Length: 244
Image (cartoon, rainbow, N blue to C red; front, top):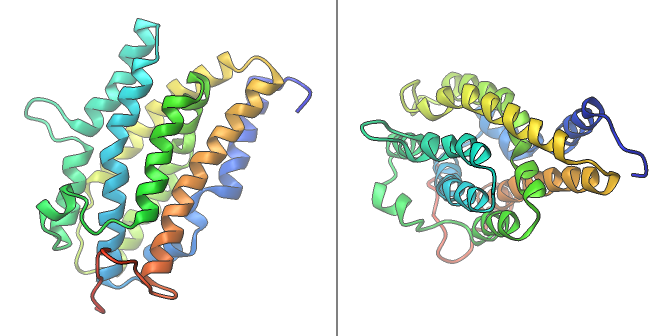
């Protein structure tokens, strides 16, 4: 990039990243939403995804620690409440544990991250490392996969309710709560990015940060597909999915 993009042009470039690279196009997600997964594969997905969910508050706390603007910190702090919950109020992590319980996974196994694929750990830990080590602008930009999440969440709810008798609307409560939160978060993060990416290099860094985050999510599904679908070769110590 040699020319500075307008805010609308940068927004469009970010949307194009999602159109090319967001993980709704991954074969595992197509399989999950279309009813092609066994219960064991859905369990493996939920177990591995919890490792990601559990690290989101740590990622956000890291970002907050790098912010010098109190107003910005206050805005971002709501993400911690969304995931960790508040007094008498369940957050996203607890709602995800409600899903894994409905799928028959013991809470202690899920919370201890036993059976999580090594590639899941590497990908998620790389994301936390990214927001710690790269610029604040890049860290905030990496969160913008939420530009695309409301669509995939709706597809997931509809697909899973239509195809799997071992889930119901109550067990999918995490997903019904997320779209309004994601839209609020996107408005704040996108506003920051378009206001602070003032040079072609900064704008390219923003785009690259979003591509990196898409790669993190895609690689997690690559690991699931390899371990549980084809060639169905889970590494030592990984969760063993049943056939049904």
